[in-house]
Image (cartoon, rainbow, N blue to C red):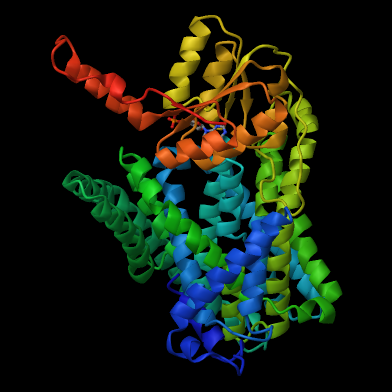
Length: 608
Ligand code: AMP
């Protein structure tokens, strides 16, 4: 963020975050390498431990951040660098979201997202201001504090949506539209705060310069609009053209580089020339690409980098946290947390209901918004810079941030528990099962109950995409009893319309698998491309029914072996089948070619 980055850097450089004595020579000379190596390695160790203890990986990342932060002894990573790396994470994340989002999708949710986000921000900011006032702060300080508490973290919300596979749902679209509005409001607040700061300081000598305020608002919104128009007119043609050209060179390496260069440079130009945040710039860049066929490939190429940088985001949040605030300010911290965890979601829920959204949509979005992160830090840093806020307010915001991020999955869990009730109240015929709100990264391991299918002697098919779709067609034509487990919202309804029983959600979720009645099933077909997830499913299925026949899908020899070890009876490797089909084609109609497609073994039969 153009306006924000310098403020943040100043805040971090000014000694607010002091460094410790015993820094290694390496960390002095190469702070970037130090933070990447030590930060990521610690995050890996602690997240592995968290995984072992069946708690959220985020706990591991945040603890790693606290460990390399200035409040704990030992190595202190460079905070300014951590924040910049986190910003790259935000760019890649928002670019990825944009890739799944068309301009049409965004316009479709504007009637809810625009008024909804504005009302929610106003209500939450009022609550925060009230709390600041109760803490005895002047109105200026209290209102900046309130504003900082009213905007959620993009990274945390997007991760929640992605983990629960909600990104492509109506609720997910509203949430993303909501984020865009919050982003714009933050940008506006950052440019307006310096203008209104003298007035907010309340020394009685300043009067509001209304014309200047109007001009600043007009310029900020005008620049943002100019950026969007430029992207929609020029970017929409230029970016896909560049990527198409690169795709045709056949170099995967060059394509990856092109995707990364486009995402980062559009975000940078958006921020440098148009004063738009990095996140918003990257989102628009992704969106103009979403209409091109290359978008899926582009999304896949940025995935690994995106995940690594998202971890760095959480490390940077952990670094800012000073655990002393828990002891020194327990009650104000509790109040701040209440605004974030209760005030904001209540405001969002009521607003969404008033705008005609279903209870389940309103509750899901409200739960997603119940946390604060990067935008709040940036606003707080600017407030301090302008002499409006003091360190105490910042500590409360940082404390509330880390705690709200940790507690956020619990709210999603609560939403899921309320689902039977909300469905009934919404008048929705409850889908047989929907595990899309399962808190994958919940603080505590959570099991969600699903009613078990009545089917017996049936075939369970996991994944109904390019492979599973054909399999389902064949099975249905032959009149088999079929139960499909599929994670994609859009695929489920057509299947249900054909009378097929479908469980919506991630098949690796134990509760969901249990309701497929594997114990009574005859055959399990795992037709998903990810062998890690498939492995989990195979293992759990084998444990549930030692006698069931399991056939899985793979793309590499190592995956065939992996799935076989975990209990698959047969593993079909896509690439081998393609090779066979090509050989069959080559041998077609000529008995003397000497080509025998049978040389490529049809199925890798697992050796259990
Ligand atoms: P394709 O690669 O085109 O055959 O598509 C794979 C299908 O499997 C997609 O429709 C995904 O939504 C679905 N899928 C992938 N992973 C899972 C999972 N863990 N549980 C259920 N469905 C999945």
